[in-house]
Amino acid sequence: MSGNKLWSKANTSTSQLIEAFTVGRDKDFDVLLAEYDVLGSLAHTEMLAAVGLLSREDLVLVQEGLKTILDEIRAGAFSIDKDVEDVHSQIELLLTKRIGEAGKKIHSGRSRNDQVAVDIKLYLRAQVLALKEEVSQLFDLLIDLSDRFRDKLLPGYTHLQIAMPSSFGLWFGAYAESLVDDLEVLAAAYQVANKNPLGSGAGYGSSFPLDREMTTKLLHFGGMNVNSVYAQMSRGKTEKIVAMGLASVAATLSKLAMDCCLYINQNFGFISFPPELTTGSSIMPHKKNPDVFELIRGKCNRIQSTPNELTLLINNLPSGYHRDLQLTKEILFPAIEEGKACLQMTRLMLSHIEIKDGILEDEKYKYLFSVEAVNELVNQGIPFREAYKQVGNQIDAGTFSFDYKKGLHHTHTGSIGNLGNEQIVKEMSIVLTKFA
Image (cartoon, rainbow, N blue to C red):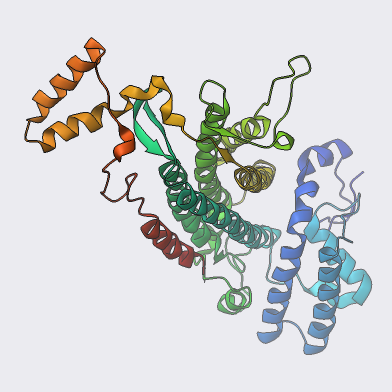
């Protein structure tokens, strides 16, 4: 029969089969919300006392009890009992067991709907900030590598065909700037997660004189979801928007990982890593496999499916709360952890990257400088189309040559000779202020 349910009425029960199906994996992810559930209750009960719905004596008992539970959660000493449905029930039951009747008063003016909504908002806000820190650290590393290897040339490709000269400074810097745009998306997700739904109840407000502005300030939200119906509609939508920010970061990491898989290949041979960061073969003793980058690529491609999976889950739901929303946790929460791990592993790998010298001395790259040769002729007054034809004829005749060691003249912003990293760093600093 059913376990300990705060919402159970007299002479009612739920079969174990139904209970197991409806709870599913929810308790596994609810543990991640425990800290935020207590923080929400601390703010809610302080507000209840302020509006006269909780005595000062009861408030003292409740706040002390909740803070003790919070300490236990942060120490890793909290779990949800087998017969308790969710984290909200566990905390309220634990509090009531310890302080008595006052613990039963903390749910006044609140529904589990807005309780879980505020928990998820607080959790996602914290996770977005954690992702921001990871992205920022990777950005700093990429800028450092770009500056350090600005003069190391490598071939650039279009259609996977040798195209024009590039550099490691340009390559690393490109991914640094990509992260700036990714953080723009993540910053937008932060603004959405940084709104307080608490006080919306089951989605239709309350007849109690709740002070929602007070709980918004106590929980350090930037604002609130004003309309109580929309506060519930923001469930699922908030998760999807955060997933979009995460997916944007993942797209950059996946592309970078793919480049690394190519560049470590013997047919390219541009980069290498210490043996302890690669793996071998069970039968081929020469192998140094880029397994870490292959897994980053695979994991980040899966992460990019997260917004679509959430869309399929919530797309046809009408307004109001629906149990489908419970499933957003098992879709998004693991994806966030995978995203942070991929950021950390990318940073670890790039911290040990080794760059090959003299890459462009290989004969197969001699046509890499055909555009340079055309531009030299144009600078001498020859029309572009005529210069293009002359160089093309030299290539066809096998007589083309270009001494790139005399120097390449790329001076515009964002080119080999003028990376523009200072501007990129400035753009990143502006984006980071959006997480204040």
